[in-house]
Length: 315
Image (cartoon, rainbow, N blue to C red; front, side, top):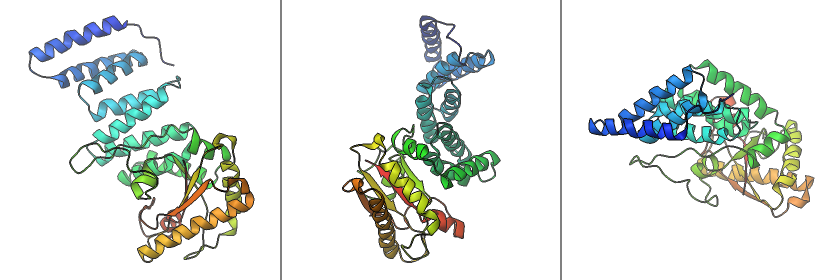
């Protein structure tokens, strides 16, 4: 459990002003100040004063943004018993991902972000991040273990998880970096169905709904999941909200054909959902992404199966 701060804010401010003056006079700039804060954070961690350590890590990151400061801050915040620290951990992991200088660093930021979401009961939005982390750091067994655990939950969804994935997730989109190195915004409106929009900018869920190859015919084993989906969307949590069904296809076949096939698949699910709960009429739109946004790279049958999926967004 985090301990109470043993130093007052006035003392912390005096330390900051004093060292900043020394750094500026020596011409070494804010990164020297940041290293001083980071050293103080390590001292506080050694003394099990996690709250104070978090304050110093925040100051280090503000003075001189570096991957290590934000990554460590995120991992510290996610361990806190204070629920208010969870969103702060998310923010730290997002910044760490932007500042990472290697695939391994990016993988760790994604891994810990996914672990936090999964810990909070949202394997749905954790899934894509842990898949990317696994791709970036294939030899990391801890990442592989979390990916396997999340996949089991995706394959066996609960109504509680689906509601959290759409309505109560800590999820925030990762910052996108443009070709000029500038941070981009959240992206275009959901009315424009492209990969960056549908997958990256909004919390979403997917459930195992399988189709026969090159067909909109549903696998009989998916009927339970469609009923679960309809019941979830009818939850009181979503009164007055609308949804978008986004169909996806694997990479086999022509791109234009796959785009239309993915839309027809999404519409096939829509029709079944309407049969289960006609009260959802007028609240669901349908679009297709074709093969443009795979969640699993490669040409294996497992990858093809994962990429033939239905994604649900809440509006």
